[in-house]
Length: 167
Image (tube, rainbow, N blue to C red; front, side):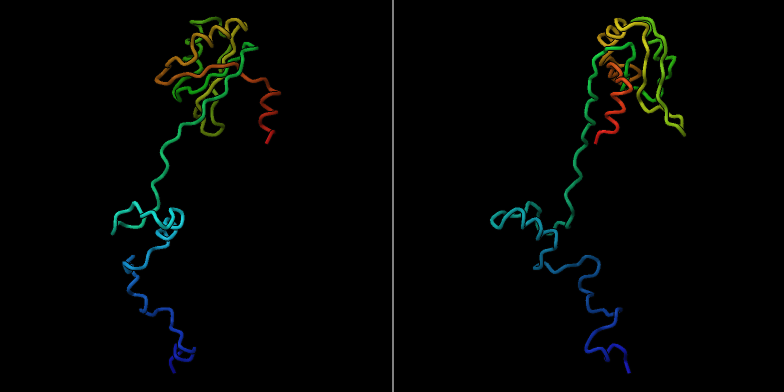
C-alpha cells in the first residue's frame, strides 16, 4: 500500500504539485507579499511606482550618512584631542606639526591593542594652556596628510569615565 494514500489525501513531500511556482514564476493575477505590503501602506487609490513586469525587490539601501561631528571641548588644560587623523600619521609627524605653533611636551597616537594599527585619533600635550588654545585656533580644520583635522581640548579623566558609564 502506498504511504501517501493512507493519510487521507495528503501528498508526500516530494510532490510536483507546486511546479508552477518554482524558480520565482508567479501567476500575474496574484500580487506578491511585497506588493501587498506596499499597497497597504500606499493606500488603495495610489498605484505602485514599479513598472509592470519588474521583479519584486526590496527598496535600495539608504545612501551613505556621514558620521556625526565630534563634540567640541573647551581648552582648559594643555592636553589636546586630535581627531580625523590619517592612519599613516606617526607621533613624530604630529610633533613636527604642532612645533610650528608652540612647544610640544608629548604626542601619542592611539592604536589598536592587538593589530597596533592607528585608530585615527591622537592626544598632544602642549607646554602651556595658551599654546594649546593657539594650536586649536590655527590647526583646527586644516588639512594634514589628506584629511581635515579636528582639534579640541581633551576631556578630563572624570568626564571620560562619566560619559562611558552613563547610559
